[in-house]
Image (cartoon, rainbow, N blue to C red):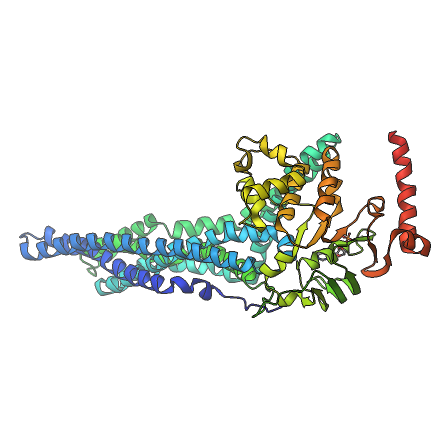
Length: 583
Ligand code: ADP
């Protein structure tokens, strides 16, 4: 399988990089221009305090300050507008890119990682918002403004600049602990403690109905309370350790402290003749800005860390290996299915199938039987290319599945598994998924054969009823919709899970009937859970520990007195007491 290289943050942001740079440049200009009004006030003060007003100079500073303020506001608005538009474009682009990638990853991966995919599409793409829409502006505000202020203040008075620079420097020194491995370890423990609490909460909420029915609420309640207490204890320790630091840094960075220092230090310097009284204003106005970079280390860094973590998860999904599509798709000739020396291992390394050789003759029904965990579902889903074989080959009509594109493959193979997924679309569109061009008459015919036509007609808007919006269908009804969908697809090969028929006793007979109509004339591979229902199968393939042990018709296998005969005896023996108990 081709492995995509894991894209980094820079690569993810590539589509909007130009706009982010432009926005940053605009922000730098806006930030610099934004200092002018403050400088203007500082320059105006001595003019206003002087005995005779220098109208020309005062007018200049008034105009410069006012104009600059307007420019700054415009620059700020334009910068934010650019980054927000870039953010929305990037989110759209990434969602499309992720969706396109997910369409090519093996279905087996999607099955196991559905929650990851959901989280990445729903939350993580959105979590880049802080990074894209606000970080450029915040970064500029945190660096350019303080730097420019510092330069201006240095031109006014060096000693006074040192006075206002002291608190942020002390805060920075206090925060040095944040760069130690011990602090990082502690933060990770906080994250883990929060994770444990949310898992316990989810577990509590999800299982409450189930444990209530057994009268054992305390069981999960106790687990939940314990998790709450553990977290509470950990968090108190955390607060005890770090709250002092947080509070002292907050005080050091507060504008009020700077003002107090300006007042005390300023008066002393003025008394000593080292500063003009009016110059004090510049420090009172610009001094607090010097704390911005240190303050940004806290909150700004947090959003950067979260954004990076989200970007990493997005990258991981985007680098999931995809199923290779052939450059030229070959058309199978006929519906003979062959498994040739098939081995299969899951990505975690578990080898599940070994040396499987099996032929499904066109128009016949093959049942896969074996203990739970024997590899039946894995084998059946390989035929629908949920994943690629690790060794050997599966062929339809002489063509390796890997030499067909998905459209060709799914024209050959339809499947009905236990969990039938319905789209948020009309019944009609859901049924026509595999053959959008099917006429209404054809859809109705498939629905009749699947024993679901009358139920559909009873829905508020019949075939045009929107599913997924309050229409309640039973599990059995949903399964029959899945069967109708497969029926309509006209694929000559059908892979199905017999458990489909067992899950809803009321409609079991209807589903059974629907399935046998669906199977008629097709090459069928069925995962069988009850041997009694597949006695008439053309061949029964017996799996044990991932290997094909026996293959033949029911009677022949019984006569062999091997694995199948053992399974059969166990089923007869196991079923009897329960049947008697119920009768
Ligand atoms: P059966 O359908 O016969 O019950 P399965 O094909 O579901 O058996 O499973 C065969 C083996 O493969 C089991 O040991 C199971 O634990 C393992 N298995 C199934 N799915 C996965 C997966 N996604 N990742 C790793 N191992 C898996």
